[in-house]
Amino acid sequence: MKHLKLALCGVVLIIGSSLAHAADLKAGKVTWEKLNCASCHGADAKSPIMPAYPILAGQHADFLAHALKAYQRGAAGAPASANVRKNAVMGAFAVQMSKQDVENVSAWLASQPGPLSVRR
Image 1 (tube, rainbow, N blue to C red):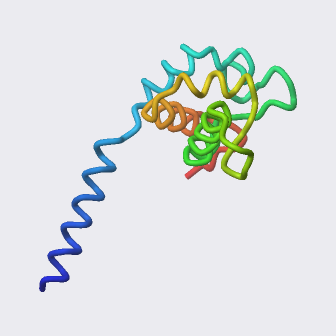
Image 2: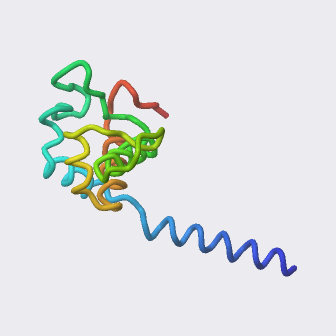
C-alpha cells in the first residue's frame, strides 16, 4: 500500500509539473515573429530562402527545442559536442530566448502543417 501511495504521488507531481510548463502556441508565434525567423525559414516555416536552411513546420517539438538549446550552448562558448551547435546567426537568435520561449516556439512550429507533419 505504501508503494502505491508513493507511485500515485509521483504521477501527480509529473502531471502537475508538465501542466505548469505547457507550451503556449500563441506565444510561440509571437516569438517567431519577434525574432523574424521567417526572414530565413519562410513565413510558413516550410519555404526557406535557401535550400540549405531547414524546413521547420511540422518538425517534432522536442527536436526543435533540443536544437535551439544546442545553439544556446554553442553561443555561450561550450566546447563542440553532439549537444552543441555553433552557428553565429542561429546562436544570436537562440540566446534571446527563455526556456519558455523555446518550448512555445517549438510547439508552435510542430503544430504547423508541413511536409514533416504526421497526420492523424
